[in-house]
Image (tube, rainbow, N blue to C red):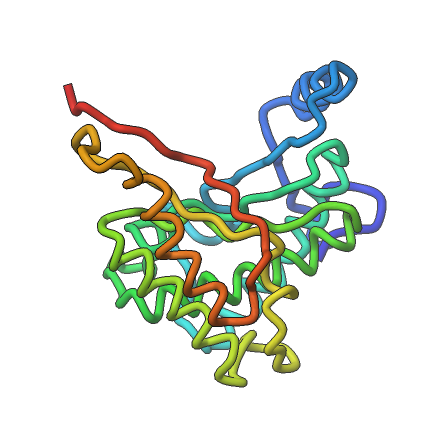
Length: 231
């Protein structure tokens, strides 16, 4: 838990946002004053100091898991409060990749990763709204290992929300809007497209899943895209 007026947790440990928060605030403030008002902040992973392995998470549905998720909410409240000029937060990055693992570094199934991601979004959004009611949550950009990988992961997220079992550790909530305000996935092609509409067709095909799950009209933000040459 955080105290009301500082970045220190009640147990005395500090929530460090960056090497110098004031520099970040000054840069963001200058962008805001220059007319750049659509600012998206992102975090690879946030975790307490008792976890020594990067991108680790306690075992799903364990007591430690609930403690961890409550801390996630507290951290994001502090971040949203500290950077009020950021109006959108992408709270994870490519969660269907290798970023979500247990302490022993074992890789989990995409379905379990989707559950953890969904819980994380809910708790993070809860904290963000406390810190800045005007800020929204961007669904973490799903890695485009293939179009089917993106579609299946997005389906797993919706299935978990609608199962009546999410979020774990809280009163069940089947309203998609309480998990994320913006859709997001990453779009990369390893070769220059030979089909004129490949980019739009790729996105439209995935968006159909959102439309089937009560999210027709929800804005889509593509935070990464390109044609890497791997050179």
